[in-house]
Length: 588
Ligand code: GLU
Image (tube, rainbow, N blue to C red; front, side, top):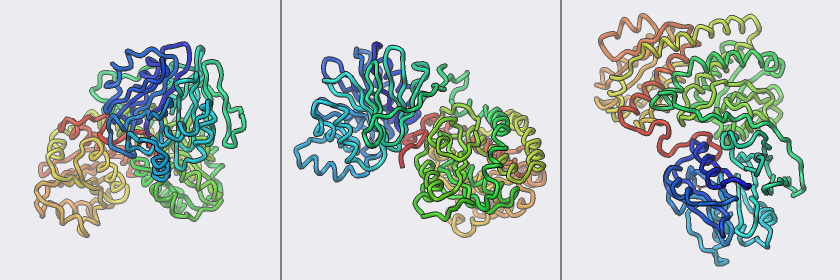
């Protein structure tokens, strides 16, 4: 969450910071700000998008600057709460949460500090100012000792020619340029600016000047950290004629599945070797990744017959899980930086378990700490709501589970998966979601129902619709309907029933009838001929091509994603950047 970028060098800091903030905006977009050393300290910050800030930055000429795009955790989005925060001659940007901010703030206020915002982050500015004795690096060293929580920090001081950065749990990288140096929360922020980077480790403090970078570890000892190539794509990622990234990325789903299958070939043997002897699997993730994990759990149980559990990472990490060396934890995260998932993985490792990172990021905290990485090759995903990364995760988990079941079974599954990209393309060409999207957009609530794998997709369908259209609802197992949700059904509600498992079709058809009998609107998403015959002409029907039941989530997923997209378009929502959300959730 939140993106930060800093630059010091011979170039125009305002221009570089602005460019970086635009590339980072997917991480948070409720406000943006920047600070520069230019005839003293200049701080500009505004509620709203980076573009609101742009005219102010155009007037600034400076060689040192830091910038921030915010996703608020403490304090509403406002000019005052936007970063950087300033105290005395020091300005700071922060990604993360200072968990002990209330105590620190009370203490600082009793010492005479005047707070201008409601954020947790402002305490860092006041602490730096209080600890400052002419050297910002020393002030940072003293300050971080007092902080609890997560942070990626960057600070500048009006009387010094340097940026000081510190990291604990939130990602932070250094970039080595030709005529200056950089610091940022991720590689894309530095795309096209530098070819070499260093990923800071927890507890590191970095002192960045135009010509030099010094890194200190958590004991404040100078350390050398690995220099690596910057892999971020420098070309700007355009819309290629699509009105939104969500639609573009949805249409890239066939490529995501294909590329993920190719990438899996390279890790198959490593995965099988690393997981030999594993007797239990736990899958974890957050949001969409958790929904992919639910599907992965069924694959592992059905294919490899290994007992599997699934839990959201935010729950898993605090429940003292039972893990030993025979347990494999599959940690699923698009960005590989999701704070809860990374911490869940760390916990699993500390208890002796093996961690399998299933991620779309090839270099992230999760890939660094994992025992083995199963790549999702969806490519960059700009829209905050996940689409092609979700289908990529499903494909990766399908192959991983098949590999655990043995070579012969794996080869059969890999062959079956090859048919999916074509079926997906066919689905996109034949899908017409317009009228159902209008129905959902005008419903008071939309319920997504299904059984088994269809239920997992129902959860994702509901989440996607909420995320991009703000239409409320729930994903529900069809069988549970009569145990509660039925009370909510009336003519203002719509139920979308997913039926892609022939063996359970009759049961889900009962749910359709139960809702219809109570006056609720119903639509069916199915790829089963009998179900199509039964409901054609009677209710809105989303007709998917037949396929193997275990692969049907890939098709029904794009159907519910497309429904969410179209409903959001009907309602005129800001589809790629839904309110209150951000991609890459690096805070708890
Ligand atoms: N906790 C800080 C705030 O609410 C930073 C949030 C972020 O990481 O964007 O301002």
